[in-house]
Length: 250
Length: 252
Image 1: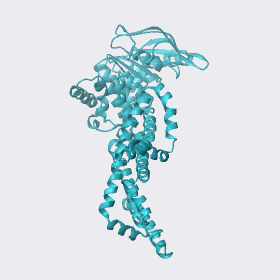
Image 2 (image 1 turned 30 degrees about the vertical axis):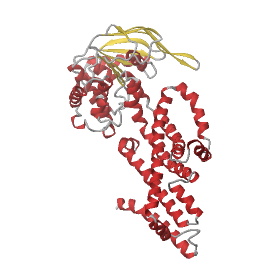
Image 3 (image 1 turned 180 degrees about the vertical axis):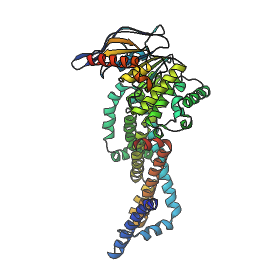
């Protein structure tokens, strides 16, 4: 579904060019959930923006669904670190924004938006404005907005990093349920090992400056997973320990 | 209790100010010709309410027309300048230079160019309140948060959609800072034009009453101007609360 072939990206800086990513090879299969983990400044966000078509690679090729990425596409949805909700729109209005941008009929969109908000536990909050919602609720609205166009690819850039620990766990659990119900090809950038192990089929570990693929780890743990009991499973402990070591060396 | 105090305190301040003024004219025996006492002004108003209201209406028309044109033109120019950075670099210095010309100095020229009707007055109002509208709107349009710009790009929004759905609504709170400045300037512009070209309006009333040494009438006109300016200002505030109720909530 997603293929990156020797993708590099450098950014101009005062002291010459800074390499953010160096010769990344990565293939993500249809419906697969891939987590990308690494220290800050390893180019994780750059990687997502390249796949989203918001940035162009300095060299190498990226294809999504077999087509080279040249510009943002409606089949690819990006969920950012901040909820990035429009403060003058209600939760429902915010979820409908992609529908309006695509000039699609509002009525059908509104139906889908209500279903999504209900599934996210926000049925009673659809007419509230973002400033009336908690941080976790705002991020759930942002998730609904990312899902409204039924994207084939979902890109998530540390979407839960601004939330408190308990809300994070709730959100991760909800995301897992959602992915099991309707698997979309997902690339999930995080710096939380627990989140990566909970959610991903495979975890890509990046080295910092420039970002290279250090290792791709398969997570062979039965779903649904949880941060409760399954955290004590030997397979989970093994996986977490391995990721810790890889990140420590990186 | 708190609410009562909130509305009572400004009233108390106003009443005290008027009382001080009144007692000063009485205690020091100031003649009405120099500084009329509040009742003299009320009498002056009651002598010819129709005339004063008609001239006030004329000032309001000039002010609101000029303000409306300045807001529309300013909004349009701000959008064009922020969408096209090369044009901004080419024209903004010229705009700043033009704005630094004292508008009062232009008033007689406008009469030469446009005659004695309402036109030169409206043009002066436009000139005086155009700049704050442009500057404030541009500031708002260029302050779109990075994550919203990125959202707009990732949704493949075209330039029109990006402006209408994201950048302009986001700019509204800052635009209103400019509008509140501009509406007060608009009244000043109208009065300056009327004093320069006293064919009508409260500015003309002040000029004519000065010629006939009718100080209470001049004060009645000034009081009406203050009332008018304040009312227009709070109308803009009301419009702001109606259009951007979210701004107060997120800046809490």
